[in-house]
Length: 93
Image (cartoon, rainbow, N blue to C red):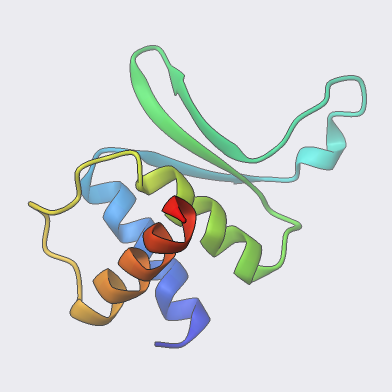
């Protein structure tokens, strides 16, 4: 799969899991140290992704955050599931 397709598929998976993905320019918060990642706001899961990151970095952030959730009961394209499982294997090593 092409990187933009993987990223779009990961965002779609997040949506299916009721996780809102927010892309924001985090460098505009000069007084607060911020970084991309998973958080919970008012009981709802959010993944905040720095808009200025390279696509490959955004993919790793989404995959890392989504690996904390059970996604096996949700349909995912086989190529995307393979990519996500390969990433999870590297994370666990």
